[in-house]
Length: 320
Ligand SMILES: [Zn+2]
Image 1 (cartoon, rainbow, N blue to C red):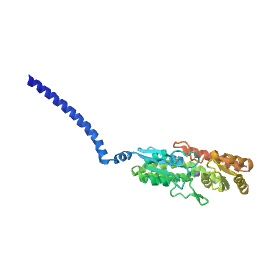
Image 2: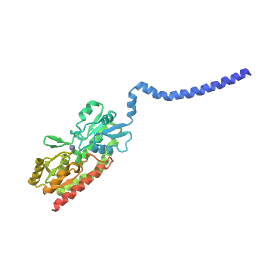
Image 3: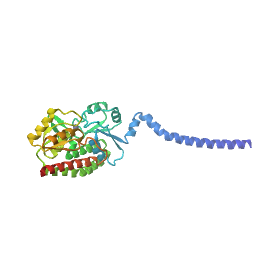
Image 4: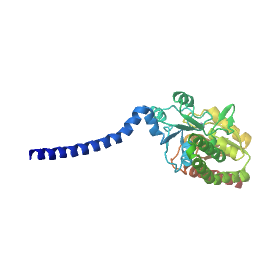
């Protein structure tokens, strides 16, 4: 009896031990995979994980919208942008701590290039592994004097080229998705095409003649319209305008019989009002697309509005 009881007890104990050891073996086995990976690969482990997602950062709004369209629907690509510049273009933008933190985990940085991102050398030095794609690559930039003007996104056909460059750069980095990037770029370009066609129609109808611009980005708008820029007053940030400068603008208008001035509403309104009050020219306000809402059709919508404004003004001038 005692022997029997011991037998049963031992039997139960054996079953319990077997069950416990089986489940704990299973548990350890499962965890073992992770542990082994961590141990074998050390810091590599984190990279293995982030290789599943590619983190793409863009320098500012037009690059973000272009890239957003290029990566549309592709799994494992994450898109972020640097902090917003407080005023106008990125020219004098200083990277924030948040930006540096953001870039430290980025795989690819997409910039406009042509000198607009003045911080890029510092970034390339700090993060030598970061892949930098320049959307302006291969685009013949306009120049203001001996300074390159890189606001190429303001010309729809050049923006299309930028979209292609972004797709080509991403395809090279992430060749598994190359076809998808290229197909997305082609689809986006197809949707941009009506804008380019509207611009060439305007050029055909009203092109030529002289124009004055209050933002160097509008050099590209003038160029797309086949118009000659006879005076540039760069009002892309809050600043004082001297009486001398004001007089120079009015003289340039009368000397060249300029009928149209392109300005940015945020910083060019004061000078635009002077032009409208004291000269025969008319100031119109279009969007330099350096900032805006972050959705896929944002560039298309705002460029369409710009073209609406241009079309109305050019029709008016033609009618007078
Ligand atoms: Zn600018």
